[in-house]
Amino acid sequence: MDKLDTLEHLQRNLVNREKTLEALSIVRNSLICGLTTEKILREHKGFLSRRNELLANIEINLVTLQTLDLQNQANDYAKLLNQALEIGVSVHREVQQF
Image 1 (spheres, helix red, strand yellow):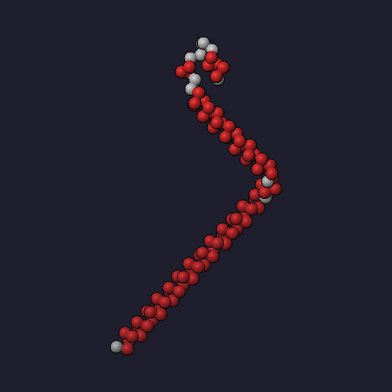
Image 2: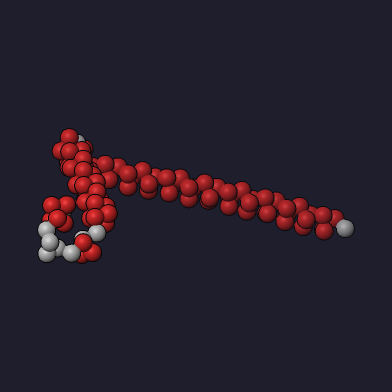
């Protein structure tokens, strides 16, 4: 670009050196990131081949956690219902005594 800039027929205002260098830097960083990602994928082929199994395990674990959460909520509601029934029976007995 600097060599082209020295030519007489190329106008300086058509080429912005700073923006061009910034764009080249962004492209360079993207290429490095892509090559690094490709290297990681190549090194971990076994992990990628087991991804379906891993996803299935994650799904099973998630369902189990949701079931435990529902059971916990059901237990809490059962306790509250029992307490409400005990209070109701207790109040009914007290009212009958008077």
